[in-house]
Each structure stands twice: as C-alpha cells, then as structure tokens.
Image (cartoon, rainbow, N blue to C red; front, side, top):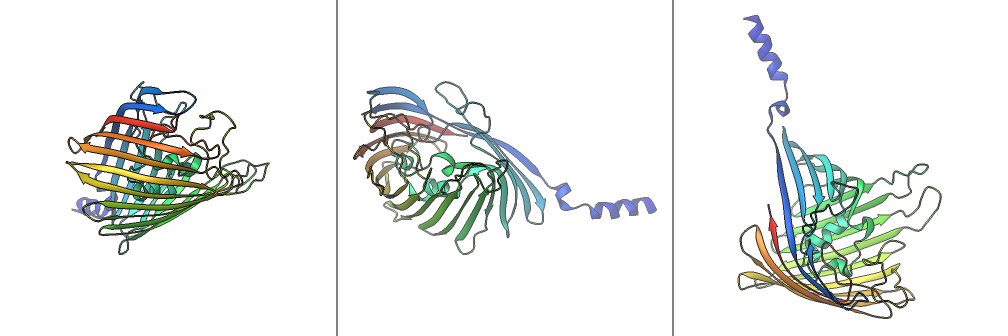
Length: 355
C-alpha cells in the first residue's frame, strides 16, 4: 500500500500546467486584385497586386493553458505575394510578427519578439475606416514607415481591461554594440472602449543615434476615436510627428519628377472618415490632410471612397478609389496595404479570403 500512497502524493505535487491542454492553429489571408495607378512619372500602370486590403499572409498561432489563469502564447506570421508566389520580404521568413509570451486574465500579457507598435495598432484599429488597407489607406499620409509599424527585439505589455480602459507599453532594444541607447524605441497607448465608443491615444519615440553618431529623436503621437451611430460609424484622428525618421515618405523614388520631395521633420495629420452599412456591405470614405510645418511646407490632402461586400464570413469583394493633391513639391502617392503606389490616384478591385 505504501507505493500507491507515494505515487498519489507525487501526482498531487505536479502543477496543473503539466496536465493543461495546448493548441497550435494555422491561419492566413489571401488577398489579391486589380490595381490601376496614375499621375506619376511612371504613367498609368495596371497590374495584379497582392495584399491590397490586407497583406496576404500565412501564420501559426499557439496557446497553452498553464492553469491558475495563466497561459502561454506564440505567433509566427509571414507575408506572401499571391501574384508571384514569393515571400514579400527577401531574406526573412516570419517578417510580419514573431513572438512568444505569457498572459493572465488579471495581470495582462507580456510578449517578446517582432511585434506591431501601439502607434500602428491605433491607426489600423481605431483611426481608419479602411483599416490601413485599399487605396484609401491611412498609411498614404499618416507616417507608418520604418519602425512605426512593427519593431524587432520588442518587449510589449498589454494590461487587462478595467471598466473599458486598457494600456500598452512597448520597449525595443537597439542592440548596437558600444551603446545601450542607440536605436532603442519606446511606445505606448491608452485606450477606452465601451459600447459604441472607442478612443485611443498612442505614441512612439525612437532614438536615431548609432553607436558612433548622435542624432535627434523621432517622435510620433496620435489621438483617434470612432463612434457607431448605427446608421453610420464616424472616425476621427489627429497625429503629430517631430524629428528625423518620424515621417519617412512611403515612396522614396521621386515619383513625380522635378525636385525630390523632402520627408517632413515637423508635421501634423487630420482624418475624418465614415463606414456606412449599405446593400449588404459597407461604404468606406475618408478625407485626410497632411500639414507640413517645416520651411518646405509640402502639404497634401487625400479623398477616398470604397465599398466592401461580404460573400461569406471569410470572403469579401472590394473596390476603392483615392486621389491625393500634393502641394509645393510634396511627393505622396496612393498605395494600399501592401504597396506604396506610383502616382497620385489609384483604383482597386479585388477579393479577400481569410482562413
């Protein structure tokens, strides 16, 4: 009788984590369509593009219940080009996101790896009726280049919701030999979501130093909100950018010729948008203004209109059109979620499937 008693005692000491269930699921997005761009020195360009509404991707999501309210999670996600079958970033595999972490219902989540910034999640999740996709993407005028979108070597903490309030803090290590501060990045967000109202403030601050050269910091901030009235959903956003690399141009190839456009070191953006249910789908519309406060004064505005129609829970058809008006040599182009664009106007027609 003694052996069974010892066995039972040992089993009682094994934590619930050892007996917990785990799962790994594959997911993805297949998005492709027709794109027609015009207005740049490249002339009118008609092509099949991948990732117009959402970048096409393949990923793996893992979760394990560790017991006591704790769980472990991971995400590996690569970008794909449906028009060619290639990975969308040469020399990398899981270039979109790659992280692992722990989560607790009462304490929040902590993840480590390559991840979206709180600033970018605010643009796509709260500010933009086009959710950073299609010709009307907020990315055409709001700055998302460089590490404003996602950053490697990042530690991200997301708090649990307290009466609709959540917070995020992200710290990115520069990992440059000879300096603990060069290249590092710090960001965060504070959000409120209750009923029909969503409000979110986010910022991003990057140290542009290298191990041998000192440089000024780049800073971005955005305040965004949306409210669902039922008959329509209203979107509003205001952003500010200051310092080097705070607002890199999406297309750096001087798309309109003449004097090369200058990336703003001091600017602001405004957005007003709508999402209106109609004929079984959703009409999308937005107007964005870019105000360059430097001596170059290279301002721009964008007007966009689109429509998305769901064929099922996973498949939708879409169309969109946007036009940018550049002033005093500005070089902003109409792109989409996966491309920066080649001219000041573009039309999209495509299909998007999630799995």
